[in-house]
Structures are given as structure tokens and as C-alpha cells.
Length: 168
Image (cartoon, rainbow, N blue to C red):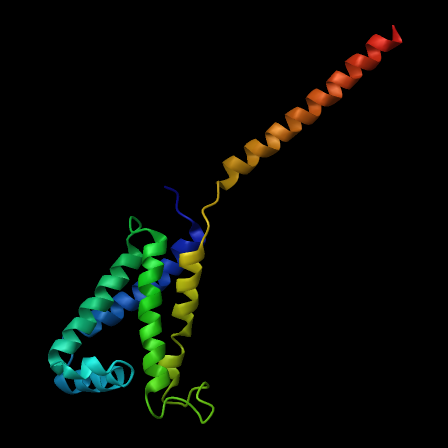
């Protein structure tokens, strides 16, 4: 199992960011939890039924788990990308359904909406992680090139031997 440096950079940056966010919410005051729950409830009405403190804890634990999954190299990249995609989709749904977050066009953010709208980068990273392709690396490419060169050399040598034999 090789590590793709591009995917590692994506996982490290988003994983550290989300893990830090989750750790910061571990001891969320009730009022702050209520505010986050209210915004999330705009997109997912079922969340309004939870106790605000419980909601804050679950949000914190979820962010910690996702951040850790992105940072741990033994978690498959596509699986980590799916988790990030679900999280980003939730963030963007909250952004689009919370009043005052978007301008009249419903897409571009207001000043207040910029904090959530910027999370579009997480959706893009999730797509990159889910759709990444495993390459054979330099070794596979080098061996294919080597085989092609050897075959071309063998053909050239055979032609030269045939020409030499015909000249005798």
C-alpha cells in the first residue's frame, strides 16, 4: 500500500482542520450549541429534537472522528473521502437553508454566510479523494518503457542480422 503525496496533503490539511474544530467544540457552552443546532436544524429538522448540549457533543465527536479518519493512513482514501463528502454536504445544506447566509440569488454568500460557504473546498477535496486512481508508480512506467526499448532493440538487431546474412 503506497501513499500518494497529493492525497496525503489533502487528507492532512482537511483532517487537521476538522479535528481541531471538533476538539474546540468538546466543551461548547449551551448557548453556542443552541446556535449551531438552530442552523443545522434549518437543513435537517430532526436535529431540533435533540437536547442542545447533546447535539454539541455529537457534533464534536463526529468532527473528531472524521478528522482522525482523514489523518490515519490506514483508513482507505475513498472511505475517508466519502466521510468528508457527507460532512461537506451537510455544511453546504446548512449554508443554503439558513436565512441570511446567501444574497438574493441564493448562491453567493453574505458576509455572515462566508464562514459556511468557504466549506465548498471540502466538497472538492472529497471528490478528489473518492475519485483518485491508484497508479502503478514510476516502477510500472519504467518497466513498460524498458520492455518497449528492449523489443525495439531486438527488432533492430534481427533486421541487422538478416541484412548481414543477405549481404554474404
